[in-house]
Amino acid sequence: MDRKKASDFPQELLDLFHEYQHGEITRRAFFDRAAKFAVGGVTAAALFESLKPNYAWAQQVPKDDARIKTEYATVPAPQGNGSIKGYYARPAAAGKYPAVLVIHENRGLNPYVEDVARRFATNNFIAYAPDGLTSVGGYPGDDEQGAAKFRSVNGPKMFEDFVASAEWLKARQESTGKLGAIGFCFGGGIVNQLAVRLGAGLNAGAPFYGAPAGDADVPKIAAPLMLHYADPTKDTGIGGRFPAYEAALKANGKKYQLFVYDGANHGFHNDTTPRYDEAAATLAWQRTLEFFNQNLRG
Image (cartoon, rainbow, N blue to C red; front, side, top):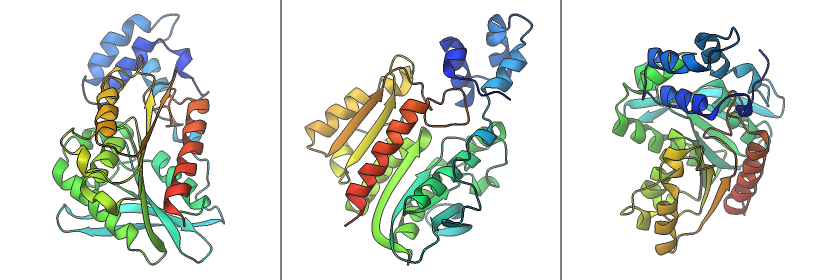
């Protein structure tokens, strides 16, 4: 399948698919409302297929890359669902490295998120990407099924699973003890929550288009944050919430940087969908690596 770009689709159609992905409308409702865009012999079903993730596009770091070592690891989470499984990537060379927790979107540990973990390993970090769907059988290999499973998970217990993952990763023998967290969409919101929960136990957080922490919780944040957001005219949900978050961070004297990527859609870092924006994703990644290098090394 040829890679499509966001500009190949009407914004209304991209927004419609976003609603479907977040469980706000059914697949049938998407088809019904997308019908008006099905012209020139293109069906609503064909539009749907062209908007779905294509994981063949995502692999920037091959699974067998000689620079790194990877494995699936299960972490005890007694305060959560008992345990959580995830993907662990580290540099092949022995030594101690800063740690980065990688939190997925609302569809579980898919190939895109695993690749992000490998990208960190090639940049001399150890990275763990937990699967929040572990308690319901794990990521099923399909994002649609993953999204459906996600809605059945006990949210508070899943958060405790992520807290346990952070503590496990930070305590690894390969870890320097410095911990960062990155997350996308749902995962971005989790990074903000982890900054509240872990306090000084988190050394840096980089949420991508994530739900903000509540105003009452902002004083508990100790870690410097790098906040990445899509164009608020295209991501009207989260895009409408970050100004108040920034105001709360500023009012409480928190250390943060906020970047808004003009013209970019929600999900712009995910290189498996048409919403991927290469320029925005590349810049955000470079900024994040520099941010983690500054705050997690030395």
